[in-house]
Image 1: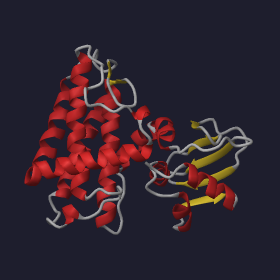
Image 2 (image 1 turned 90 degrees about the horizontal axis):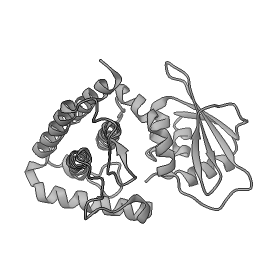
Image 3 (image 1 turned 45 degrees about the vertical axis):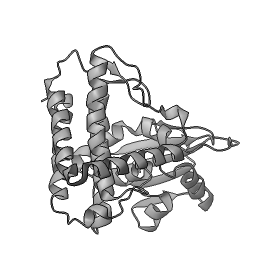
Image 4 (image 1 turned 135 degrees about the horizontal axis):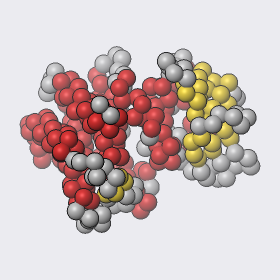
Length: 279
């Protein structure tokens, strides 16, 4: 089984993992706040159901040579992070209300349809570029996008209903592959700094990973060489790093909980926390 086939299979596995959990919830739990600001559990599920349908539509159009934005599309560059978050929340809430007690069956049906569609694609389809709000993406990229959506939003739900919640180990390599894009998407720019700040993250799971996040104040990017001098050095496992990058686990909280250890000053902590506040 090649890497792409394994990831298509992981789409199904992550969806079924979340569906199995959702079936255990009481009616009241569906209205419990999630880790996404302004979103109830049901709103998160509505967002995921909509995402599966949207990805299927965009890929289908792209394979037919149509990469134009849908008439109702809002590009990522045309709104700030706050406006985008509010718009997505309003849309998810509206979908939840419209689906009512058909929310879970709809989520199950749409994820299954998306997975079956991916299985039907041939080798020539995977590099075809298709519309996405962040820019044209190859079809194979949508596989990883939906894995991260299912994994992180599943965590958003479980973390508010259980004492301990984790990302699935199988999804962590996919999240790491997304780090260069994620750092750009979640960065909050400010004034340009006198000199770039390099934060080195040493991930100490089974295989050592080193990632440098470089901040100039108005920009930030991910570097993986780990050779230049670092302003601060942080050590954690992969899951903690992923939750930090997604804004689910602020740096001061990760340090206070002992999930991350950092060699640096209070100023270095404050600067990073200000630049990466989540989306």
